[in-house]
Length: 321
Image 1 (tube, rainbow, N blue to C red):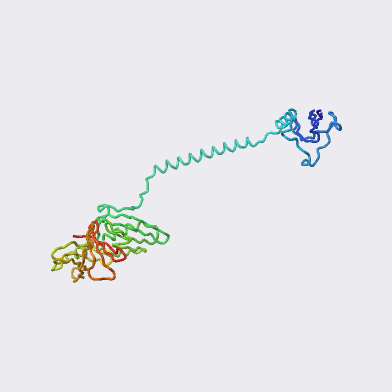
Image 2: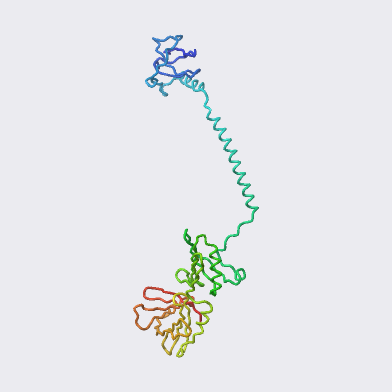
């Protein structure tokens, strides 16, 4: 049996009797109203005021709603006032598109202006040609590290410069430093400036250059050192450009092998007899006289002389003959 009742707005409604005491919404005004009991409510009677404690009143379950209640619920939803959020979203979206367009236009204008300006010239990271720097030899910065205190450059020289030429290179590299102090390590040819530096410079900010090996002039003078008088055959000569800067000569004296090492063309040098250890792709020698260091010498694949001891390689001397 249906319960007939009216909303405060005058809309006449009906609901199954089993929903008496439950709440629903008026499809016209959207008010939340209670379905009255048939025995105590008449269709045309005015409804009592709504109870203040709505949480204590049961709501019609969605699964138990009949056709009339579904119609009432849909009508109530349709009669609710529309939210202004979609309109606000449209307005905000339009403003965002306008701002995005303005940003893109500004970026395009700046890009055009930057293209019209001449590009800045970056500082040289690689060696300049001899004619470009007034006769300075070519060089290459192979590694660089920096902190707030100093910039450290590891530089490989293509050929051995004079002291004046090295000073020109040092000042050119110093101009690229970002820190107040610049430290430069120089290596020759295939030599590693980290482990076998030929020269070093410290600019703090005064420039100080130290050549640890031989300059072109001192090397030419050292090569004028005469061969040992009793040498019958010369295996080779090598100059070590770091450390002591010695000239090494391996030669034959009859059936024995000898090593002559000297720091200057006028010194008597040091003579050591060697034992050949066999080639096996490389020419290996060892000091014949017992030594705790166990001095060893190897002519490597480049023709240079590797000098070491029982713990490993010490230095590499460059072949000059």
